[in-house]
Length: 154
Image (cartoon, rainbow, N blue to C red):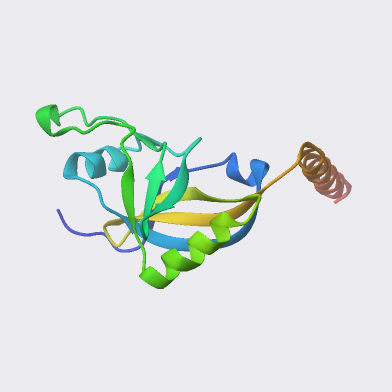
């Protein structure tokens, strides 16, 4: 199978922008087995409720669900297993310091293929309060109304 160039998005965490203020993003690789990659190619992955944790100088994604590959039989792994992220040591140290600060989390935003390899966009995020979420929804609604009125006028 030839390696395709470019980026193909496999999954996105759409709730992340609603639940968090995104401060910074990082691109990282993942340590996966073959059946997991095939399942991701089919789009059978869920990033909702997943997060990243730093342990012993290594980054791991926890709570990400990759459905078992249908033709995988004995080679399939646990769908919720903890998977290692591939980052430079300096990046891991930096992320570890940020994650120790109160209110900050490391969450995956999207999973995609870049030149045939699985990559994850990782975000340093700060949780939103309920009033922040309401304000953001009100701003989106107002912006939509303005755009709708502009289209009607012209």
